[in-house]
Image 1: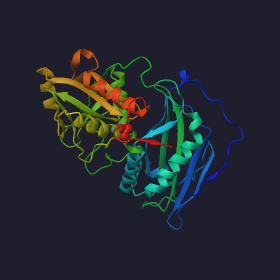
Image 2: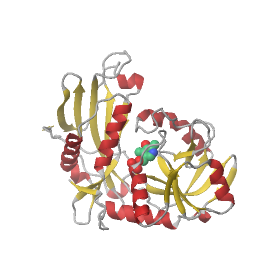
Image 3: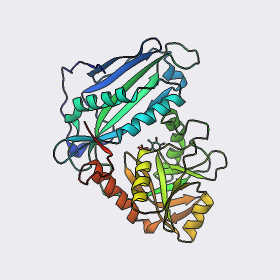
Image 4: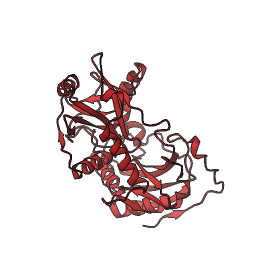
Length: 353
Ligand SMILES: *Cc1c(COP(=O)(O)O)cnc(C)c1O
């Protein structure tokens, strides 16, 4: 894979690790590559970070042909930088592309681009505890016409942002509202693709929950409004009567890499882990009978996010006394230990640049 490089003439001052938020500061460069049906992927280039220009009829602006990924580069104690299961992000992005009629990127080329570009920007990976370099690959349809069809032109980019620790004030359990009106996705729709449109459609419920004092919503399935799907933009897991349960991937749920890692870790450690349908009635029953021991969201940004309170139809339920549970804490310690290289990676999940 040939990648041309244009270095910035005005490198920025790297921010102080203690001031980092999420996705506000970007590194000096970005990666871009173009696709056309005739030429395939071409003009792979690293260029100074900056604005891009689009034709006003560009497909993405009208019909939402956009997909993305999110992963992180972690700085180890010895100064080197590593990725966590990047092949999973690559494969998922190609599955999202297939769903949205966008072009796929051969796995080897994608991996090559990722390693070269992150290698090029690696000095931007912060080293303070809990900080990392967030990597955002994304792709959009870029035909310059209003016709509706699968796109003939697309653009793939990667931008990178040094991000602060998700838990600056320690891991505090969040309050979650079970959403009965809006739905995030339906089977056969785009729920299992990581596409921008899913986020646009989810924002209203999240905002309403925030106004009522909750951090996020727990989504129910779009057909029966009965089965648990996800929490905000994270997958969700429960410990019910000793068993770890998480919604099965039925087509409307995003197949998270953190979810997959939690399942593999816990199964390997001898926990009973079930991927199955979980109805809201089962959950409420488990809450009322004291069988719901733990609940947490999981995703790359937070790793795990314990749920301390659930609200359903105006009734409030506390989980594990509003404190982080033992399994949730164990997952956090193990995954972050492997990601930052402080624990031995017996799974072969980490990837050097
Ligand atoms: C990205 C995402 C997740 C989490 O996936 P990870 O690979 O674990 O980061 C979960 N749900 C939604 C809707 C997402 O977009």
